[in-house]
Amino acid sequence: MIEEGLRNELSRQGVVTTTLEELYNWGRKNSLWPLQFGLACCAIEMIAASMARFDIARFGAEVFRPSPRQADLMIVAGTVTKKMAPQIVRLYNQMPEPKYVIAMGVCAISGGPFKEGYNVLKGIDRYLPVDVHIPGCPPRPEALLHALITLQKKIENQRLTGPDRPRHLDGEAPGEFPVPDYGEHDLAPPNNPAVWQPPPMTRDE
Amino acid sequence: MSFGPYSFLALFALAGVVFALAPLAMAWLWARAYSPRKPGRVKNANYECGLESKATGWVQFQTQYYLYGIVFLIFDVETVFLLPFAAAFKGLSTGACAAMLVFILLLAEGLVWLCAKGVWARK
Image (cartoon, rainbow over the protein chains, first blue to last red):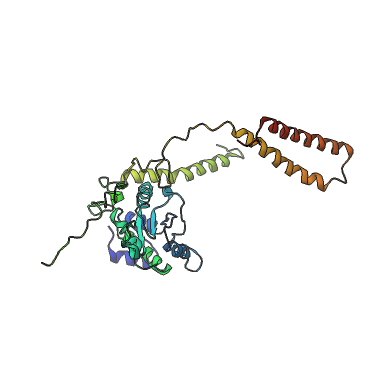
């Protein structure tokens, strides 16, 4: 491990030093390929973010892939209905590691204005490990870019080894998340307990 | 030791192969060292639209479809050849005109045959 002072001195003299971990994270954070799918109006803002005015290509994330096999970022853009949730979890499972999830808009976070709807999932984080949440209805393209930068900062700080290394570097961590079934009244199970637990209810007596 | 005039081609070919294989080898080594493979039933499924595939793709099709294929061929080929025929009609020799008429006759014959098969009959 190189000392910070020596490193600064070397970079002032025109010698760039790096570690394998930094190189790896640098490569990963600058080539996030999103999966090309949209669920509702947030997808329109996502499309706007990929066009010339906002230009998500500045951050290396313009390659929207039509196949989950080639993507490593899932932007859940819009209302997730209970009918759609198993498909989303299945697509997420089919993406190769490392993979990340951005929940875009209040619908993907919590159900948003449709939270009371019988057919709306109250947040995709009940089934998937969401990395970044963006509030907004819909969030502006700048908000999506901010979420992307936040995710890049998160990737930048991930460790290559050790107990707090990310899931994809951990052989014990699960590679697939259970796909919910259509139950009698709700999705079964209603949430993935390994990812999300309902908050404890406290009542004032 | 001397080299032939084309020996650098072999060198380029070798460099090309190494250039192509080195990233694959590095990715394989990286996966061995750090990033374990995690295959699974859903991940390895061959359908990638989020839905589960129901049955196999090896199913039988109705053989009657060939009749529609023939009808399509007749009208499609007729359209493709009739328009240039009409455009160049004045400049054509008698032989070319006769050949074209024979061609149309052959297609019309197919149409008559389809009529005789009862393709147009209301089921």
